[in-house]
Length: 150
Length: 419
Image (cartoon, rainbow over all chains, first blue to last red; front, side, top):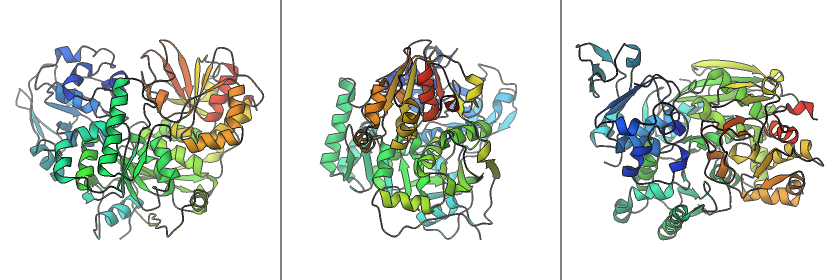
């Protein structure tokens, strides 16, 4: 859980490492420029879900800011809103991005949640169901193929 | 039915008789722009390219501009891969190292025209709205697919209309105006929305329009667009582009999400303080802040008129001793014109360092990065933390006039004080 708005693409993936083009190498630099979260790549486990605030991924169209999370096998990113290019980027790259206010629903770090991407529903451990913005048909289709290149 | 600019263009490009806001349409863009990231894009589809070929050799526009000339072996290898790709597939529109920043090349070479749809794998592709074009930034996966199929999906955005009244005061520019607007709307205030400028736009020069539209993405906008008028017509005449233009504009009774009005006479020199573009203030409020570097140029404010503005302040004078002034023309054309009319000679005499046309320091790639604790005032478009090198450096965004005035004094300075 990252209680912060406007996390930009420079915070997610610093320009120092922009020459990296292999996805596998990108993971270790995820959030490398986000104060307090520099150790995210070490702590992140496969399937972990990032929950955050508004305008996540603001700024540039840099692909590394999406691919670094794919490299770490992040399960999904749930934000109150996304930068428009970032959102498209994630959809086309097959990284699940979900729009929901879940960060304001008293959820705890480390809690296990279940996201039904096709229905737009998030289920908490205590059975509470929180709604998310439903994906468009195009988005569903792209995900089911594993990305635009799938 | 009445429609906005965005609806009309997407309707035309999707071959539909009606489109609603939030509807997803499949479109074929007129052009796809990619830059140094072309090597990574084609890396995704090498096998498919061999099997299916390129959709068109005329549709892609490729410019090597971000890290030019190559800074290391890895960059050089990426550039080489792009040149080989261009050769193998016979790509018509290719601009190698030294010709300029991709966005400036698109508007200088007549690719961006009224009513066209251009997508680019760079977020500042929204600049061509200045020429009544629907242009927006996309990602690399999508760019890769466009090279193969020529089509993609777009969501029809809702629209914010910004009505401009009167005329900007002297020593105030389009940059000050757009910083003021971004400060008001917020970095995400126009997320996935179109921003239309209307009203007394005849008083806004084409160069100011480029700057204003270039910064559209800094409020999250999908597109930022001006109507086609005599200002646009004169620009096309100047770059020798003729033909039948097909301008598009919103119906007078089109549906807007929000309408904002700005009285241009009230705009003052503005800055964006570190580390977000919407963290704006009047130059007056930050005056006296010591700077180490001043960056004048980039695709936002690196056209000849921007260097002329700087020269108004710096001509015959020397910049402060503690300041490095970097001159970064947006293109070779700008560089040539500024060499011919003596602008660059005079700016160099004042203490400027001339860099080759390209992006370099603007995104922290090379040539003029900042050390810990250093402060830069820049005419570029982003001031994110760590954008120009060290994470603990500070970048203030401002107009070319404010950048020049600050380099003269060594501290952030309102240009009206030194005129």
